[in-house]
Image (cartoon, rainbow, N blue to C red):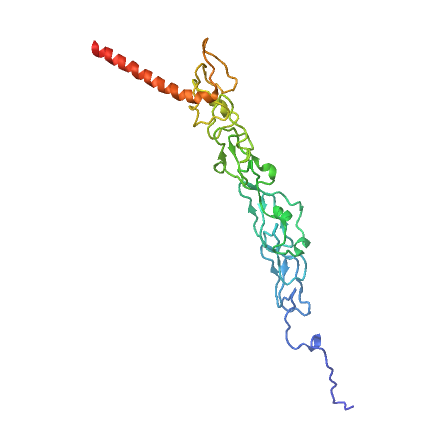
Length: 312
């Protein structure tokens, strides 16, 4: 061969000796100034991501995490977890009393009054938990309760925000009944008239305990306040007497009714000999007749006194 003839060798395009211009840094790596390797300065560390041509790693934004080296983008935290700071290598479990209902939660939401959320049982955040795909619309009744705040059941209430478990839902106060998710006394309901409501009363049980014989019960009566409403003298109060009808049951003829008298089928307290026992069914008719006669008697007495005064 001619000594002046130059031998040419063909090199692959990606061979270092074949490169004639600066090459873009590969995705998942970053290249500082004067990087001389196809791997750049290095692989992107955890908590950071590197797109193609990155000169510096970019921190994963709040609500996202990067759990492995060499990642090209961050991943959003799944519901039930959160990432409060940039450059997070993991997503943290939502703390008790808070909810993280959305993908990419940055700041947990404090559970509202009348709701609670207990710990899901995770002691620490996990990189691999968030690698599991979530199917939107998939039945997740068991996991929903660990993600969102659950309402306090009927008969209980939670007046504070951030209640951490069901034991933080206190029994509904006496004299009132509570529907589910009650968080304020204004959301409770007074016990219906003619009934007594103890602690933990629900709508279904609010009418199960009637007011005691000898007492009347207005709205919001409790097992202790009922004794403040003694049946009035000259009247009797059968079981379930309300405040509105406390004057409806006048003492029947032949009986006397001191304060606290309750109607009983066997009531037999004659005032004097030869007094007649009046059955309950007959009493309502006799009551109307007696009131009419009493009015006529009072009218006759008034006319007699008026005539006597005029004669004198």
